[in-house]
Image (tube, rainbow, N blue to C red; front, side, top):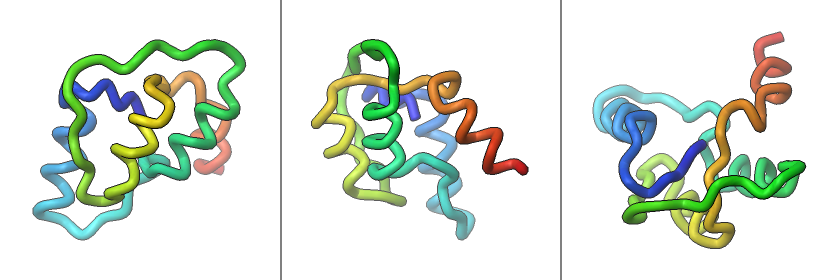
Length: 85
């Protein structure tokens, strides 16, 4: 969930997949974004670039704009690893 707003490769990949394959994002939603910002133990980096819509979760762009920060995978690593088992 980096949400840099300048169309990072993860966003481009996710959007392309959404157009061609039925899928659900893994921790790439507005709720996950808000939870990650709340759990961050430091000031995350600010967002840069243009905002972009996310067809899989229209509220994600709003959540990113609300907080104005990006969340790197390392910040939510424990949650990601817990999902795996």
